[in-house]
Length: 218
Length: 235
Image (cartoon, rainbow over all chains, first blue to last red; front, side, top):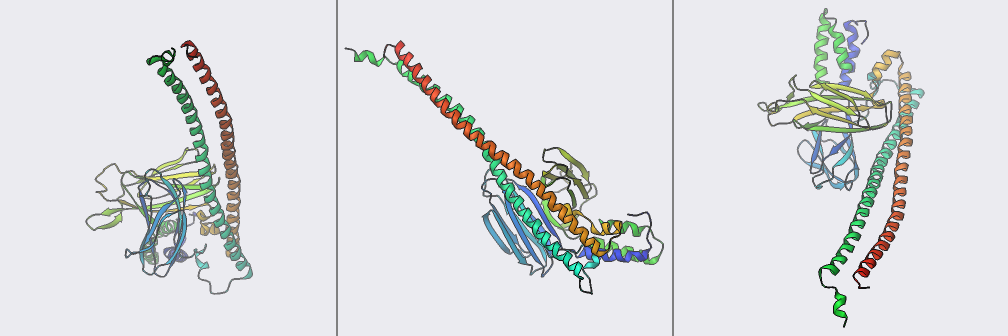
């Protein structure tokens, strides 16, 4: 937002920027909490002929499973799975409009889940607007940059995959740790209660009734 | 971001007719460009939370736009200016690092200082229950993390980079993101190992303690009962 006010002629590259922003492909990656007996839906507008993909994974909660379904703008269910831990779904949009994908935890009564999803529409946009409209071929340096960029994207994706897996395992380990604590305290209390009540009960057998031994003596 | 800035900049030269035409065109395109982004529905008092697990010193930029259901027209219209969203961001230690109210359209930014799960919560600030008229609020949301949050057009303009230099800069940013993630991975693995070792210790000590308690209770029971029966002259 510099101090120099440009002339209206320089608004043309800005116009170009906006034009490309208008058709910029969208993508979203979110992790959200899904309470028990709840359903959460997301919608996104997709153009005809554009390929979109949905990856999702349950990170914490219950048996680490969730129901998922995807509907096209006409209301047809194009994907539906129940009690899945993770899955990936790709589809080429035949109809232009708002696509809906929902995650349901309605089968669970008391465990709320944390679900991660990655919804990508179309291809990755170029970082500068005029990179997308090249007339000449890429130079060697530029193609090397493109190769490295794609390879790094693979690395980042795999790091993300490991992070999610690790989050899931860590959640389970911490859950196990706290369960061991509660269970050991609970069992100590139960042990003491049971042993004292055993003794008291035995004593009560011999104090309320006549001592059995007396009838044995001749 | 760039759209808002370019609009503001063009608005400063109102003189020429071309400027005015361009401005109108830009305005139209601006509205067209804002048509995208994922959206979901939120109730009036409902709070929606999103979790971002990020390394430290990572920038997160969130953009949202709200629409209210208009019953007369039976479609979603841009929300009234009075309606805002309250955005609250908590760090992994549950300390609030951002708690601000924005309008019906807003953009929030924060940088993480501790690695871990940050929680971004949104809820509407509507106090008048009749405002929603039984409908839902539609929220368009877009959250960009780390390298994706960089505005390369701005970086190119500020540092005066050529296209190739900008590509290399993007690679550098990506590699830095990978390094941060790896450091975070190491930190997480250590925490995981500590938790596992703590569980292992607890199980070990509890088993020993349980055996000792059992033996002690058994001995106490027998001695107590023996003295009881001796008192009752049954033994």
